[in-house]
Length: 405
Ligand code: ATP
Ligand code: MG
Image 1 (tube, helix red, strand yellow):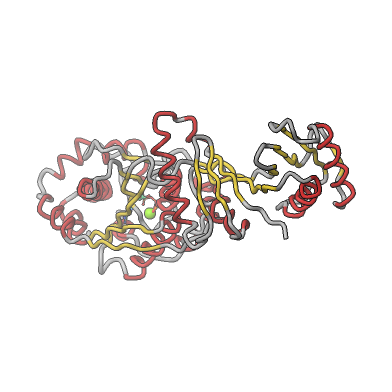
Image 2 (cartoon, rainbow, N blue to C red):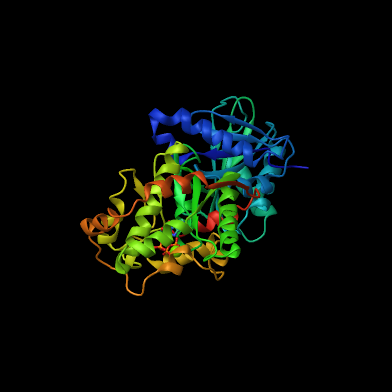
């Protein structure tokens, strides 16, 4: 019985980045090997332009589903290698049509021939195969200008190759190819989405979560663990640093004027996150902030909060509207987890009217009377590190994310 025997993988953006190409391709290879681990017969081969998965009997559809979630892949095409026998090529063409993931009503055939000894030239092959398809496939007609589907036939010396369906991949850059950053992960909607977008851009991430027992419950901590698990579906596993933050929050409540507690809380979170970042040898901090969403996310707030570090703060959602972020979270299957009721360590202590235009000098002045250093070090030291692992093959969610851009 006929079956696809290889899958062509196109890199897209990687191939334009000449200098780093080798590093990118190596990461992509490793990531693909990981998602395809259980398909033990499949082999991966790569050249400068493309990769090929040689299936050796493994199911092409299952493998394509997995590959669709791998960042750095622009597109995929199942392909077929056949002998140089005209009857074999004809049945392969019919098989290709039967396997198409979407129904097509018009087609054309494009033949390329590098083996000039093959007894049929390109026009002849186009005609023979076109005629055969019209006779053997229901409801299709030829359209050479704008066909729904273009079946490509390549006649080479060693064999003949059939391909044509182009399945979009997840895009982005291979996970880990852009370095490592720390994601500040709350139980909310935004930060997990920011995490996905960062991974899509090639960042390896670790998560940091601040919690304040007994003001926040075990349930709200579990939420963060569940969200980290979702992120781990992309990367295999995910480190989650859980920072005990109660003492610092209580000290802030006691020592900082109420309308500045929120600003100060954020500054202290950032200082701690930065220390953990340094220890983990990451080079940036990611947040789920979106401009103007809440009091802590006005430009004045960011200006006042950001003063405590000059580490790059990446804010993938900064210009994205809330409704769009919610849409992304839904598609990524994190929305349901984020929407579970919980007490955030920030909401618990949020003052009735936080300053929307806090001033740097003021918050720094208020903080200058309090010795936070020892508590910061203690919080870092008492931080618990969990490693959660994700289930492979969640993939279709990531495809959805593609549609939003
Ligand atoms: P999110 O939906 O991600 O919770 P938000 O709209 O609730 O964001 P804020 O509460 O102002 O906005 O938080 C802004 C960002 O600060 C979050 O996206 C997250 O990156 C970080 N953050 C807030 N609270 C925590 C926390 N408890 N632990 C870790 N990071 C946090
Ligand atoms: Mg929040």
